Amino acid sequence: MTNRHISQPDEALRQIRFACPVRTALRDIATDLRATDPSGPFTPADRLTAAREAANDCTNREAALLTKMPRIDWDTTRSEYALILDRASWSA
Image 1 (cartoon, one colour):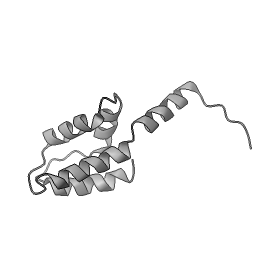
Image 2 (tube, one colour):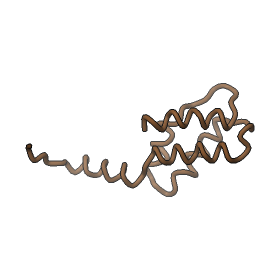
Image 3 (cartoon, rainbow, N blue to C red):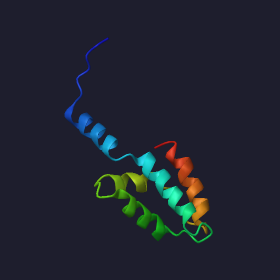
Image 4 (spheres, rainbow, N blue to C red):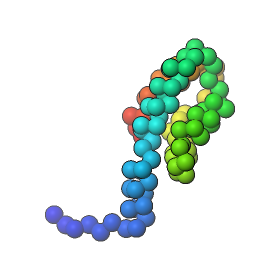
């Protein structure tokens, strides 16, 4: 087994991922969408708002969430988008 030296950028990225768990945030957003007016409409503006609120002052989390939260260009409900986020969380 070799001793692998971790570069400073790699270590910083590891710390960001540890401090800002995107998978957990996606699942939390999905839970909130199902809990509050699940049959209500979900719009592109709602996507941005959900990511911003879930970021919780983590500077990199909002961008990471928006990357994993699929854009929508069709009519969908909050519960339907929650299902999409559940699926997205598995690859986060």
